Image 1 (cartoon, rainbow, N blue to C red):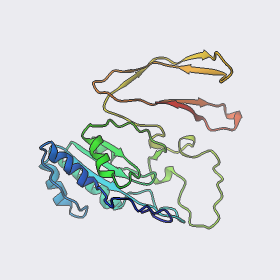
Image 2: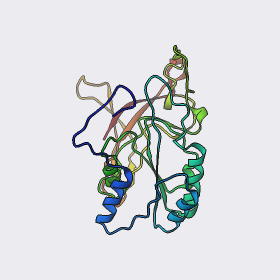
Image 3: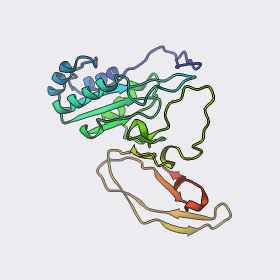
Image 4: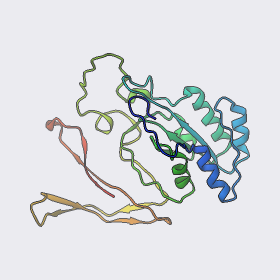
Length: 249
């Protein structure tokens, strides 16, 4: 079901949580899982983390129709931020799995080893997490939005009935807001090197010019990459400084 008018009665009526998906995959590989499913027991979470080789914290937030979210914090707010910091101190190999409908703030991001964000994955969310966390599928996505540094690096919530969109194109990566993670950002289980881009004229009338580069996988894993092309404009054009004009996976 959805948080408003969108409802889906899927068959079979099963939902795979992150804990269920990760636990099932771990058991198949002979890996023990120490679960502490509540965010209110700080000491218990620290103890569980200290006993593990890797600590995984699953967090999230929700939204609905007809109103803005009250803030960009994850559910649990400051208490959750404290929990993630505490778990990361108890286990240096802490990663955070985020399930959210949009932008969120991550004040703890520099204290953890890794962050993955799935947005809204549906009823198979747990199995999707398991595929990526255990390496069956490499992370392939790139952020479709900017994740802001702070609450002040985004257009604030508004409860009025009529809201003027006076910012025009100056939103997300096209604005002067500070990003914790920029639009288009995304890492995977390998590294890539880009050759210097070359401007090549088109052989037909389908385009004015082409930008060509060579992408080389210089890591040890197999994964796709997403090449992104941004154009910059002079201030006299009245356009944002940078605009995404093309991408290729």
